[in-house]
Image 1 (cartoon, helix red, strand yellow):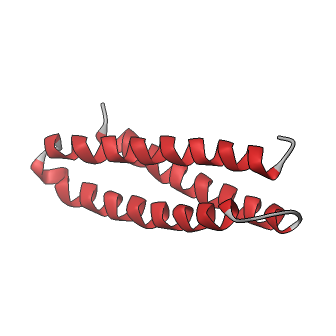
Image 2 (tube, one colour):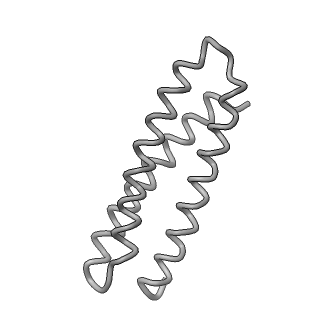
Length: 96
């Protein structure tokens, strides 16, 4: 990545991809067995919380310029990693 703008475009694509995957997982929740519904709802709540954290980091990154963007990139990557990890756990638990 040569510029902040290039990184922001890549970040936008990764956010969109993660958010679409979470939405698909939520749609599959209708088919989760009753005994796993409570756990599923807990995982969805966790995903929603991490999704909101990532959204905030992305919004900050979107308006970043110059040297300030380096700290924001790090925060964004950490939030993206946390959401990706939570999504992978939920996917492993509920998607066959």
